[in-house]
Image 1 (cartoon, rainbow, N blue to C red):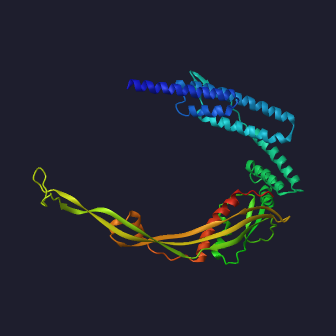
Image 2 (image 1 turned 45 degrees about the vertical axis):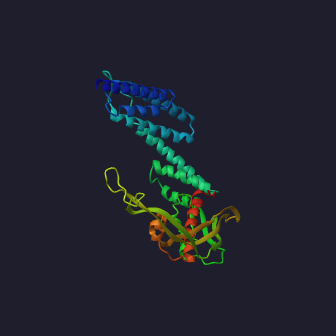
Image 3 (image 1 turned 30 degrees about the vertical axis):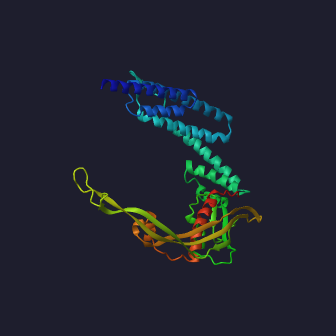
Length: 394
């Protein structure tokens, strides 16, 4: 028991030393916030234990270095008198406030009898003042950009600037309505249609499913797919699903005959000696042996077959120029297979698979319409993959 306790203490000390070296290395590399975060994790429980004092020292040193670096950086940025640096200044103030808020729950910290008092201050005044100037500056830039945006990328940039304002100062002036306007104008609108070139009627449900974009799990903030043209929308791209050929094989039933035979034990019989008498063992008991018989059966396996193949192609076009942007083949197959069997002879000769087939039944063949619909399910999966991976550039 004492050895186990000693081993536990040794392992804890080794782990502690390893953690301390890791935090020291992180701090000396200048990644002070990471070092602070690691030290806080070590001090989360039992912070006053003697062996944890080294983490208190590392926390204090990393915190002081981080604050000193941030204050010097802010001073340099303010002296540059460049409004583009306002966001950096604001972010540093917010980070400094968050850093000390993370440490506050552990205060006070001690090293021996000395109480550690890390310098803390109220940054709210600096945060709000910098935020107000930053918001006004960013909003003014947005107003200038809105005078003459030339592309959808301009609107997307405008949206990002407005979203930043909304994030740090919600409901500022008309930012929310401007965000809606910028989002609408930054969207690539894609008009989708199905072009049936097969001269065959495709199931209505299949066409509806292929154009039901809410089932595709699309997650693209800047692209909208419409199967029906909408008013007040100028479409940028067209996506056409061309169904080029539908091939259906006839219904077929293939029959194969399998001959099964095996030797099995069918009861027992007395063993006879050379004189035809029942043989006996050394104790005088009659000797019995297994009766081996040959059994046979004929298994007639019937396989129902029908298949459908749809050849398709997806085309993307720039509706503003009429240029073909890209095209993807989209072929799919669906096979209907069903096997069952009948037999003649002794069931004991059958294999496990034979028994399974005998339990199966003949099924009605699916209609041509159902076959095409089932093939379309695979097309839908492939089309979903294309929609999710293809990157339109507006």
